[in-house]
Length: 123
Image (tube, rainbow, N blue to C red; front, side, top):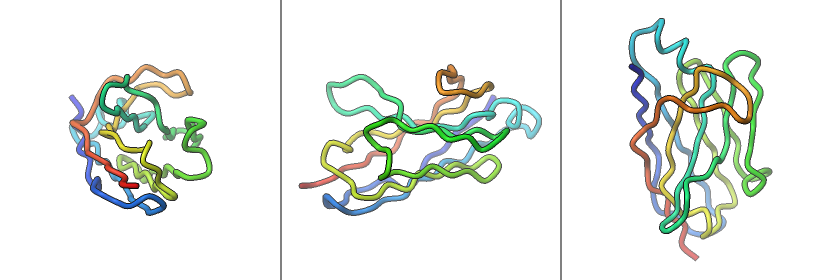
C-alpha cells in the first residue's frame, strides 16, 4: 500500500499563488514501483473530477491540462510532488487530489489517491 498526503491548500485572491505538495509513503520498494507517475486532479462542487498535471519518475515528462498550461508547474523530487499554481482564477477553486500510477503516460490509470486539499480562489 502507498499513502499519499497532500498539503498547502488554502484561500487566495484571484491572481495570487499557492503551492501544493504531496508526499508518498509506504514500503520503499512498493512505493517506488507504485509511483512511476505522480499527478494532481481536482474536483469542483457539482463537477466531475478532472486531470490537472502529472510528472513521470522515469524521464521527468510532464503533462498538463490545457486549462492550467502556463500557470501551473508540476515538479517532483523522488516520492514528493509539488504543484506551483500562479495567476489563480476563481474557476480553479476545487478540492485538489494527489494520485499515483504504476505506469506512465498521459492516459495512465491511477492506483492510489490522497484525501484531497481545498483550494479556494476569491474574486
